Length: 110
Image (cartoon, rainbow, N blue to C red; front, side):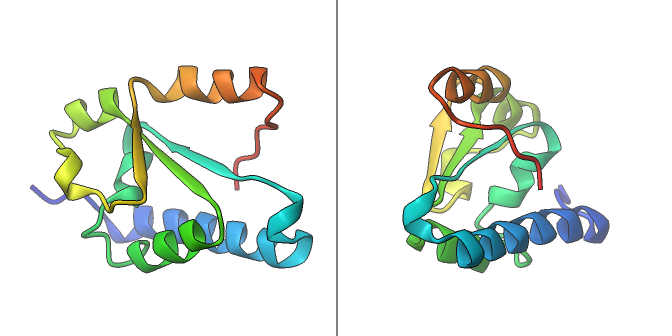
């Protein structure tokens, strides 16, 4: 099954590059970024995604957390083994975003 299309990867890669730039400009110690991926965004976190996998590792090394939605994983028939070690798994993506906001995080969609 083909999971990614070139146009989707462009958006995912662009988002990761924007996060990297924000960390450059504002400083890693000045903010905490958590990426919650769900629906088709889940594909950005796949280890096999050549457009984003190296950026994911770089961002994780800069302190960015990555969370994958288990509902989306089931919908795309994905397994934990298909994701790099840097990815944490949460029961559902949308409630995780709301939970983070309730804990003081601000929503930003690059």
